[in-house]
View 1 (cartoon, rainbow, N blue to C red):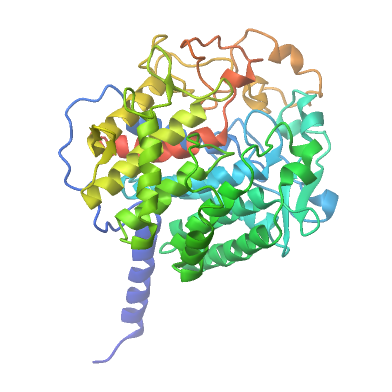
View 2: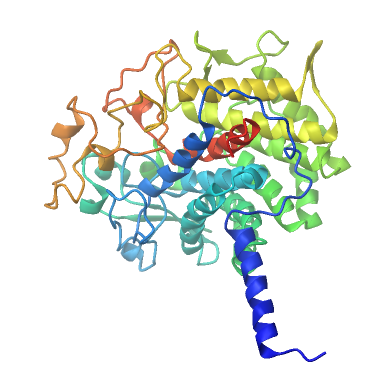
Length: 510
């Protein structure tokens, strides 16, 4: 049969279009345990709207040259010379919270959790999948720059103490854009292993959609993990006066080595990483009873992720991780033996005063993910005499997310822009000061503090931002100066993206 040029062109176009579909929000489903689920008829929340907003938030945190597709339009370009202090290109990435510093440690964790959200629940996201992928890529493009030189990671841009002495828009920033790095002489295993985890997890997100980019990410992840493991040490020691008390790692670096190895095992299928986990798991804290999962301590996340390899992929040598994961689950079940979690009178999981909502979102995500693995494996969790089903885990997660979205004593949504009542005075420089469009003239370093201390609502709505949340008595003052309760952060949103995708789908909203 003659094969004409036009036929060939059509074939190429079709294959490109097929890749585009897989890449841009119409995924092919493989053994999806959520397919053909009976949808409950009534949901008290619009999880789909919350999902859209939870992803949109990341555009408000962007540093660098903003694209024409930028949807949070009160933001403008910023940090365009970042890295020049060390003659490297570190333009891009995210501001972690309400200031103008780029902290590599929480940025990497945010990237890992956004990627995990997409890997577990991206097949349910429909049109939001592409926005989630773009949020991940904004971070990974930056992390590739930060790891461009072997055995070196640029882990921070901006002097946090000098930045915090100003209240100014990122577009006006004139504080020193100092650059800080870890290398063989001043290692940082926690930030390096977390960066490796982020690159490995993201490589899986792009594997079918952009295989060339995915290969670049996984190759870099391998190299960065090798650096983390070979040159062991805490960046909180070598860079103490720059990274503490902001993002000191109080849990050590062992949890990140286990977590990084778990992601590399998942991304590469190389038996080297499974062997590493088997040999080093105990010394890296696999069985410790630390049940707080956030930007600092990754043990719980590693246990849940490795339990998936056992429950779903049937990697028998990881069977202990089901027990380790069950211990975490049992710590959350009120009334069960070994239950240790604290809840507010209104029912919110409460771990600590500062940015508590990050533990709510990360725990909700882990509960929904673990429920998925248990369902596939037809298993439950036994907490002493209490049998805990996947359905119960989903109900606990839903209750936490519903509290965040407004089912609480104050009837307050802790996601900005969602629901009729939400925080008006978040601790965020760009949101609180007039936009560049409204006030083109520069606002000087200390001039902004009059706004910071005022009671006026923020003029720019940082849609989708999740704040630190209420105290242990369900109280929330909505004070801009109260960074513990009123500051948003990227790592609060990242795990919620996956949880909201699951809930929106399970209620027939997607």
